[in-house]
Length: 407
Ligand SMILES: Cc1cc2nc3c(=O)[nH]c(=O)nc-3n(C[C@H](O)[C@H](O)[C@H](O)COP(=O)(O)OP(=O)(O)OC[C@H]3O[C@@H](n4cnc5c(N)ncnc54)[C@H](O)[C@@H]3O)c2cc1C
Image (tube, rainbow, N blue to C red):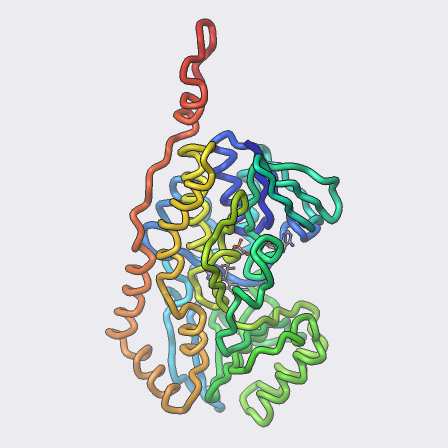
């Protein structure tokens, strides 16, 4: 059994962790020249996600790298507080830098998984007994299965299932983040300023607390021309945020000269089936939603389930893919509105929406109920047990014969 995974962020290395643990020959191809560094934090919520991390033997190590979360303060144009959210609101049960999580997963797999950086799949051709794969750099190869863990804009999904427009839905908002020059006197809090339909904010860079980053979430129709077009992105920001006070003019000025920009539509993946023959999707490629705040936990749980189902009987991948999707789809879609709910919470579209948000989240009881609900939804999965590696080895070799050492 040889499996190729596309993408080495969270879902890919987590899948590789379990597949290689089951003795499956696993290769990961990652388009970036090395493991991606990324300046934001991701979080885990509820017992199910922590249980999977524990079964991977990673929970304590991740706790050592926990950021501890950050308070979120919404202010008015004069800097006065209109709403303060506690750290657990954005940080869940355990918050960690995405780059730390990715690195730990890599370190725990690199000795038994082949990582190919700086390369990408260009074509997939399914045959009755495998998938012929061509790459940008490496010579063509053949694998039994191919798993797309290459994110919301997955190339595997595009090649095997069709163009992105068919599966990725714009949720009415854009999200941007960029580095700020000079000295900003910031503490541990993320500070945000709203007008109806917009949020502008500033917070410390998670990798380098001496530096500051700007954030923007705003209502805007989908425009495919915005992707990778800094000039057009800057123009849109200027138009949307024209005339705003607080620190917005300084933040916008910094966009022009920023060196590390993230700019993307807030969107959600919706694909009728997560597999096609010998190709399946995982993590954000299957069910991602920008800003949903649930993607990382889902990716980790999904990797455990997909690899576990394949380990039950690796001769029937189609049945394994179906069991994986039956279990994981309701879990991945537990918050049906995903990114839109969070975008509306951060940047409500009207004055009354802003007022209501501040009342609901500013109230200790209702905000506690919302947090409990999020944790409850993250636990809506009965985690299956899968055979250990030793049990798999026994299953493959039921009768080792005399003189053969048991594995
Ligand atoms: C700004 C921001 C903030 C976020 N905040 C949170 C949060 O607070 N909480 C939370 O749970 N989640 C958050 N997320 C989402 C979270 O990062 C994802 O849900 C999670 O990383 C899912 O991981 P993934 O491995 O499926 O996809 P990704 O992390 O997107 O990784 C995809 C990988 O595939 C690689 N790749 C892409 N194209 C190719 C190709 N053609 N060939 C090979 N490799 C390729 C990429 O380089 C990348 O390494 C946030 C995301 C962003 C962008």
